[in-house]
Length: 478
Image 1: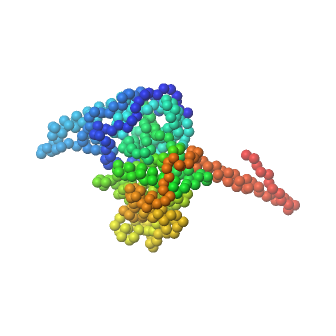
Image 2: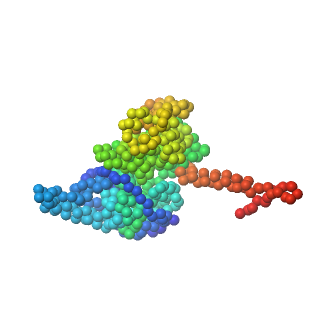
Image 3: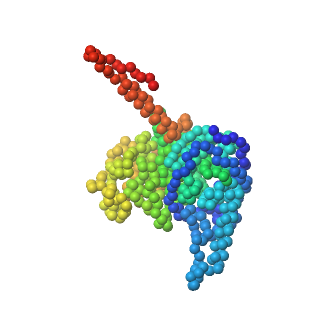
C-alpha cells in the first residue's frame, strides 16, 4: 500500500511552452535500466503551487529533444575569434538556462531531471507520492511496471507507471523524458492521457500518472468466453486508426503497437498507450533510428532487415497484425527468433521483388534474402474472412513499406463503409477487468495444473518384487 498523508493542491494541466507549442526536434535513440524497487514512496519534497514556466524562450541550437539550449559554439569573426556579441549572447543564454533550471528545482523537481529534461516538465509541478494509495500491479514491461492506485484526495482510480532508469546516466533520463514530451504533445480521445508526474526534489525515481483503463485487447482476446463481433472489431479498429492518425500528424512514431498496448475502458473507448519506444519522425532530418523496436510478432520486415531510415509505415504493419488477430482470435505471426519471424512473414505475405532488395540496401538483406521467392498465401489463409477485411489486411501487411496504407487511407477503406458498420460505444458489452497480466496468470495456473498431473503420474512408478509380482509405489505427499 502507498503512504497516506495529505496531498498538496497543484494543477497538472499540461502547459505549452511560451513559443506556443511543443517542439519535436531530432530525438536520439537511447536506453537504460535503473531502480527496480517496487515501493511507491519517493520523497516528501514540497513544491510551488503555481507551477509557472519561464516567461522567456531561449534561442540557440536544439538539443536531442528539441530543447533550446545555449550555443555550444560561437559566431567567428574574420580573426577566427568569437565576436563579443556572440560571447555576450552565450553568457546571457547560459544564465537563463540556470534560472529556468533553478525555478523548476524550486517547484519541487529533482535537479538531475531539470538539468536533462527541462522541456519535458515545463509548466508542471510534481505530484506527491503520499497522495496516492498503490493497490496492485496491473502491468510489467521491459522498462517499467504499472500499478492500479487510488488518488486519496478524490478517490479516483488511476494507473501509475514506474519508469526504470539511472538518474546518473543522462541518456537514460533522456529516454524517459522523451516519453513524457511525446505524451504532452499528443491530445486525442484515443490516446492515453498523462495526468501528472510523481517525484520530489530528493527523489531518484519517477512515476507517470495516467487515467485508468480496465482492459487491454490482449487480455480480452485471451478470455475463452469473449468473442468479438465484426461490428465490435470495426469499432475498435476505427478508434485505433484515429489515434494513430493523430500521432503521425504530430510527427510521432509509436513503434510498439500490439494488443497489450491498446487499452479499453468500460465505456468501450480504446486508447493507444505505452509510448516508451516512441520517437519523432525523421522527416527532413536523416538521423538514423534504431531497428530494435516493436515487439517481434508485430515487427515489420524492414526493421528485421535492419532499416534505420523509416516512417509511419512501421506502425501500419503492426496495425495489420493486430487487425488480423482481432478477426481470428490469436496472433498471426508467432516467430521465436528474428530469422523465423521473417520466414513466417514471407510465407504469408510473399517475399519482396528483386528490385526492392537492390534499391533498399538494407543491412541484413544479403543475409536474409530467400534463395527462392515466396508467393503470398494471405488470401488463402484468410479465405473465410470478409473480402473487404482481407483487402485491408493485404494493404497493411505489404512487405514493401511504401505500398502500405496510411492511417487516413485505412479509415477511408471499403471495410468501414460496408455492413455491418462499426457499432456505437454504448452498445459494446461490459467485461470483467482483463489485462495481459491476467492472461499470463491464467496461463501460469493452467501450466501448473497440467504439470501437477504429469508429476503425479510420474510418481506412480512400478517396483519389481523378487517373486516377479509388481505393485504401484506410494505417492509421496510434499
